[in-house]
Amino acid sequence: MARLLIAASGTGGHVFPALGVAEKLPDYEIQWLGTPNRLEQSLIGDRYPFHSISVEGFQTRSPLKKLQILLGLVNSVFAVKKIIKEEKIEVVFTTGGYIASPAILAAKLSGIPAILHEANYIPGKVTKLLSRFCNTVALGFEGTKKYLPNIPTIWVSTPVRSQFYTPQSLDLNIPDNVPLIVIIGGSQGAVSVNQLVRNCLPEWLKMGVYVVHLTGKNDPDADIFKHPQYISLPFYDNVAGLLQRADLAVSRAGAGTLTELAITKTPAILIPYPFAAEDHQSFNAKVFVEGEAAYCYQQKELTEQNLKDLVLDLIKNPEKLKRMSQKSSELAVIDSAEQLSKLIKDAV
Image 1 (cartoon, rainbow, N blue to C red):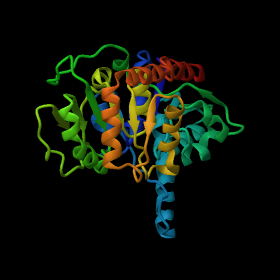
Image 2: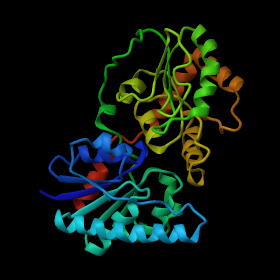
Image 3: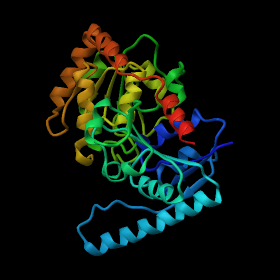
């Protein structure tokens, strides 16, 4: 039985694709590398042995702090190298982010292959710096290749968890014959978008629609609006069932979320996270806008009136939503996790 170390940490955009790949490797002995007190610990649970290391990004101007972070990275590399040796790891798979640095470098020092998946259209700093040490860089968007010259890449889209491919039932009180709008702020939530949505709700609800609003855990006003057609939740585990049922999503533009929208054929209004590194969510969203599967507004440009009117127009014109749904499905790659699992097997 081959032994795999998965390094995926921080946000759902890193952790969920890694889980999708892990599900396709039932014959592998998988260990998980994460960081303390982050999303992955609750999602992984006791499914895989979990190793925790501390690692930070270099977003600081302080030379002393940068030196501390660099020393911490060196320590983390040798900590991962020790895990690789003790657990007899044969291949490392990572979905990027800070934790990818020690994972890739430790794999290189240990003489074992590393596979990196870059989900975003604009590759992150770690991908640009360390992709040369990987056997293959798998891409979420085909156009990303031009940012990684002379690196072995393959376009596979972004994996999603298996439940997105099979019909899921909802345990929410939503009638079958009503339009449903789903609001998704990403695993970190989106307080400013939440407020904008709440201001639009009265007019939307008058149309008879139901709204499920995933607010995230950081919104102090999450419970301020009450209505029988409005369901507010900080987090909902069955996002697959929610998107399968939804007529329209209002969402951030993380690569993982966009893939889930494509797989479930869900039309969307995208509001890229304005502080994402190198504005990568805007580039992600552009692919879906050009594919006629979504509308996109920058957060600073989006007004309450714009959002309210666009949603009302789409709900009143279901033929528009039907066309967007078809276009969204054309952007889906349904075997992404299988392709990545094959890359891992071939590397071993």
